[in-house]
Image (cartoon, rainbow, N blue to C red; front, side, top):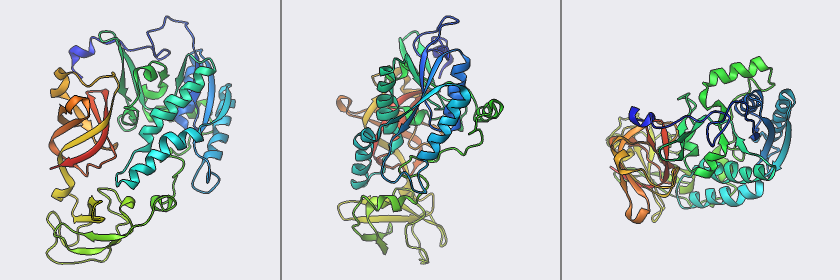
Length: 397
C-alpha cells in the first residue's frame, strides 16, 4: 500500500474493532476457542487487557467425529483446559446443522460440477463470522475474537474497516477471510494478527497453557487427516472415463472427474507409463499432472512436466464476488493490485477488469499463474490490504 494512503488511516486499538478506545474502556468479548494454541493465546491476551472474556467451542460436524480422523472430542477437552487455566467460562455450541446447509451442501455441489471448492472460505463467512457472531451477540457480546492471523484497521478517510494481512507472512490467513463484510469486521478482533507464530508459541509456554506445543490443525474437521478420495467416496458417484494426454493418447482410466483437481500429481493412477516422444514441457521421466477436465466427454487430461503450457495461465475469470468495502476496488487502485489464486502462493501483480454490470471480474497477470483452478478463490490485494475476491470460473493462457 502506498505511503500516502497509509497516512490517511488510523490503526484501531487492539481492544476495539469500532473506533480507537480511550484507555480503560473494557468490552465483553466472546472468543472462539478451537482447542488450538492461536485461539488460546487470543483469549489470554484479551483477558490481560481487562476485557470480560467468554469462550465458545464450535462443533461443526456430526457423523464420524468419533473416528481416528476427526479430533473434535480432544479439541473440546483442550479448549476446556485452556479456559480453566485462563480463568474464563466456556460454552459448547453445535452449529452442525448450519454447517451442513450453508457449507457442506455447497462443497458437494461444486465437486459434482467438476470444480474444487474451498470450504474454509465459506465456513468463515457463514459459520465463524455469521452463526457464531449471531450467537455471541445473543449472549450480550460487544464483539467476537478468533485466533486468525489477520488484522482490522479503520480508515478514517473512507469511514470503512479494512482487512489487513497478519504480520507473520508465513501464517497470514486473510485469504480465507476475504468474504467478510463491514459488519463482520466491525465486530471482530484478531489478537494474534500482530504477532509472529513463534511469539504465540512462546507466550503459550510461558503462560503454562496445556496446548502450547499442540500441532496446528491441517484441515477442516470432516476431512481431517484421512485420504481425501476416501472421504469423497461416501458422497460422490463414480463415473469412470478416459485419461488422455495433450496429444489425445489414451493413457488409462480415471475413477470420476470429481476426484481430481488441476495441478494434482499424486493419485492419478498411471504409474509405470514410460513412452518416448512425451508431451511438451517435460522429459521422459518428468511427473504427470492433471491439467484439464472435460465434463462433457468425461475426459481427464494430464500433461508431463510442472511447467507445461497447459498448466500456465495469464488470465482468470471469477464470479460470486465479495468485496470487504461493499464495492469493487476504485479505478485509481487498479494499477497496483495483486492477487492470489490459491492460498500458498505469493501475491502476483495483475491488472483488473470489471465484469459487465458487476457480474464478476477478470485478472490479467504479467507472469503466468500455475494450475489456476475453477472453484478456488481469487483474492485481490492492495499492498497489505485484502480487498476481497471471487470464485474462479476459468482461466486461459
